[in-house]
Length: 404
Image (cartoon, rainbow, N blue to C red; front, side, top):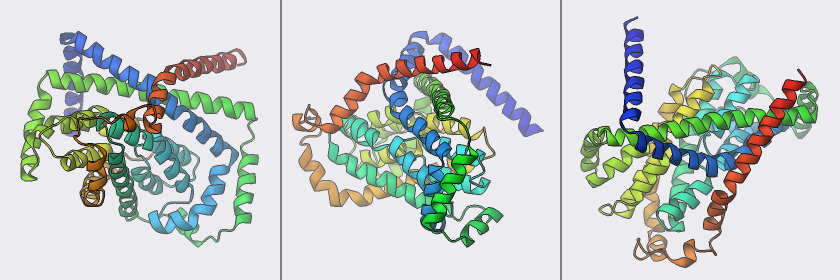
């Protein structure tokens, strides 16, 4: 009872302080809100929408169960999750967070995962996509595509290790024992595909409409969280809370022989990965290795903004958030360790690519760089895709409302 009352007081005070801060710093709040909106408008929405829609259709057509049967011999012994986890894992890496959480929650709602299996799966299927690591962080912030190799390898190797660690989480359930005893053949996979398609007897038009509306609703929620945490991050800086928290981080950085100037970027990265990665790349007193280790931790931890999105998605099911949060901390440390271990094999290529670090070779980020071209094309065409998708969403809702 006391803990519940204390939680109520803390939440009430926090929201009140947030509201008062927005009134005290209106211009700063507005600028931060615009920054978060632009990020969602230009990058997040157009990059995630196709993956969300296709994923929903693959689930409806039974392709996910088909892949699950084929991938069961790999996913069950390695990560102690069903074969459908392989689909979630691949889509999570390709499209970035919070795709893994959305797909895991969807499969849990369909009963394809037990609660423990879903908590294991969501812990290692939420990751940053290669476009953000190579395009935004490596080319956009560090001006060196070679850095993306270390960041990507550290990120994904750390995720695999988290999955292996989380296989020991929770007790074995009845569904797991049944899944381990089955024998899997290609004929069984096709049979499962057909049975799933027959069971979901929605017409293709209805299935596509449901996929579009569900995906856009999720992306609207994601956009709200991005804007909110962009504002919160800026307000914490102006209220000097970031500086206070940075003092505690400075002790940790000093013990590791890291410059204390990395404390503010690190705190910012705990809330929002884009800003944290950008600030880390601008710290001149840190070595490139130190910058990479901090950036790897930030990318792996995902930031409270992404974690809030995941928590909102998981709240629709019985999947608990605590295992996911613990996995993010483990992933952060593992990714930093992998960055340290991979630095020596790749250091010569990195230092040869950019000398000095502040110089930006035209061949790396100019028109000939497919990474830069892809990233900038997303920024240019993103708003058009977002507007068209929102119009389609309104049209689908209007059509369904008229036919009710």
